[in-house]
Length: 259
Image 1 (cartoon, rainbow, N blue to C red):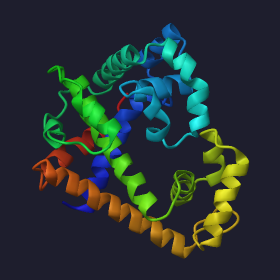
Image 2 (spheres, rainbow, N blue to C red):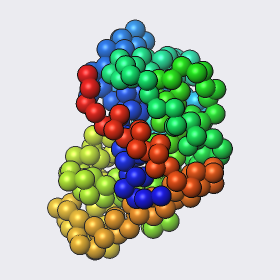
Image 3 (cartoon, one colour):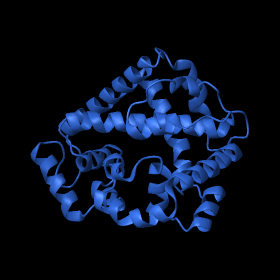
Image 4 (cartoon, one colour):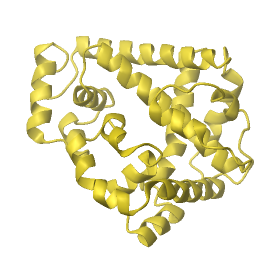
């Protein structure tokens, strides 16, 4: 299974999953849900993404925001009835997906999630019963695959000696962004982000301005290859030795910017 194909799959599933909780595209179905339930911002993000899991697991699973923020938002998330809210968010996102891509979506996605999906959140989305309604099932499959890759990525980063916040900083720099700005966007305290930036600089991975060093870029690329390897192994464990057919169908559909 080629690294290029796996990354195309990652890009495609990431794009569709963002229908659930990124409002950059201002999807009217999601906006209507948010207005009706009063769930904007991180409350919507957390509840729609994590509502399938027990509350005690939320801080451990949503690793890109500090646990203190999750704890702060929990009372409002509880008021929304998390499991019911997930259902409504999935329905809204699948309606948006159907509107954006009115042609029948590929059916091959389901083959990629048959069996044991790695990580609690990916497994939770994989376990939701499929309905035969293709946009909704496609969204569920995409969520399972996206969250599995995220889990394996953080797992590999942890084994490489990076904390969750360090990995966020490194990823931001790797993608050409400002590490401190990205950390602030996800509500990490500036002092915590600065401390981790110093720790990365001490290891020779970043400079004090937040740019990756050649060593840091090399290690980040190695982490990407390791993530690809783990995703390929997870697919192989489900009997998918070559997902090229599914990937070739999926990626072009979801990478289109159809309105």
